[in-house]
Length: 85
Image (cartoon, rainbow, N blue to C red):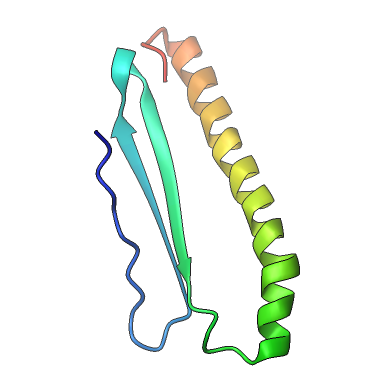
């Protein structure tokens, strides 16, 4: 069962990000990334830019970041002869 880990925004903040590593089955590790953004505080034109351009772009970058971390961890595990990551 996966427990959620909420990303809380501090007063006056617009963006929060959290990353957690969890032990998975078969000796694997799962890296989970969560974020929260408060867009209601933005003027409408900026919200549209965020929703149509920035948010989709950030999802692509975040996925690439997580894959890069996975590749480096798997390469390190293979070099050291440890269990799968």
